[in-house]
Amino acid sequence: MENMDKCVQFSIFLVNKPGVLTQVFQELGKAKVNILNVAMMDTMEHGVLRLVANDPMEARQVLKTLNVPVTETDVLSVTLSNHPGAAADLCEKLSNAHINIGYMYCTSGGTRGGKTRVILKVPDIKKAAKVLENIGKSRGKDMKVKLRRPGGKRNTASK
Image (cartoon, rainbow, N blue to C red; front, side):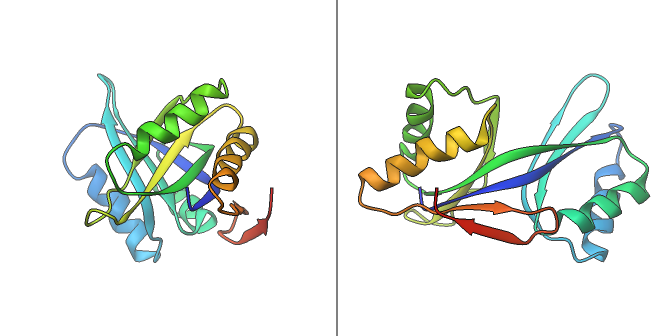
């Protein structure tokens, strides 16, 4: 695990019909909000778009103008090497520390050996970061946990 961020994730509840998702992405794009992670799933009633953006304050303002139901959740973002078993290692470390993963999604690295950014919903972000930080130290790597402030700015602190 190379770095970890505490991030704001937006869960946006959308009507299941053509063009609604496009509108969300277009408005975020017009505001120059870059989407770092995204997952879309559906239920019988609506679609749920989960996303992490580079500028949470600006994303929040854009989403308010769309007049759609939105919730915010703190999540843990972990950068992993993109290779077989990397996600299994991450899950095993958290499981061994009795930390449940409510859900997760990720980007995929372009090539083998690339990087992937995994978003984890865990009940205690600080505890999960400490467990993963200690794993990095045991492998000879000094992990730094970067806590993202509400505006996209980061505080870097060794845990």
